[in-house]
Image (cartoon, rainbow, N blue to C red; front, side):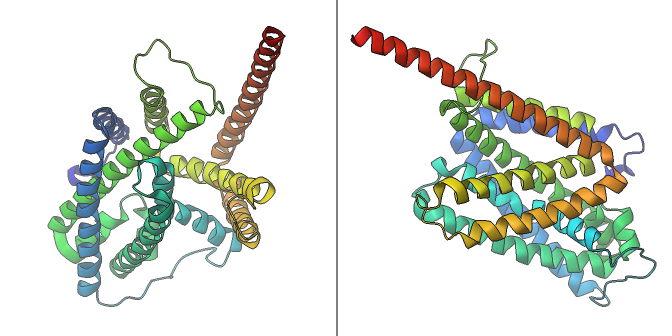
Length: 330
């Protein structure tokens, strides 16, 4: 919307977001080969475009200094930890690789490599973009334009053409991310459904379980996009992600350490770092937007209660079926 003077009404951004999710849904329905081709093509375009912008932005900047004038609370440890927590979202794209593990050729060999390559690429790209933005905007301007600072930074460096270019790259990056995430999450949900770990209902829909979980994923994404702004979606995302990460590391530490041949200090360190980042982020949101924390806590409680009830009913069903099988045997 920066191409058209912004979005004063606040309505066009969610409408465009909803349209993008529906487009990604259609592509996902058309099959794996098309998803791979589209996502790969978009990935190359966005990485190349962001690299070009970063390099040109740094080349045209007067200096690489960051302006810290007129900024309050810069020294707050909780603010730093909160910002670090949000920064984790920038790198969590590699979970798309792990969630799509069954689709990867020779996953035992290639998943680890893909994760390392993706994180390394993110470090290079984000460092370039960070310097390009900080070199062309003051810190107060970055904060003011936080949702579109890349486009705002292009204006003094490259003029209106730069804005068009960065908006196009941002749109491609968002489209590619949505496409890949819907693909990965729907498959992860389908796997958990087949393992009898999450409840499932067809709701009268034809097709496979994966097609159903694709619909559920898209509907949840549409609701979030329609009713929450970008910063609140990101806040919910990082809270859920860090809590889930801590739970998974604890699960590895408690139950799977020998099975996956893990060194215990790795998940312990990850739990400590996750907890520090989460604590800082929760403290910042407690003072700035407690509503998001309320939504996150209530949602997690509902999920936990629902999951306990579902797993309890599954155990009872298994017990009944085993008892019936035992009686038939005798």
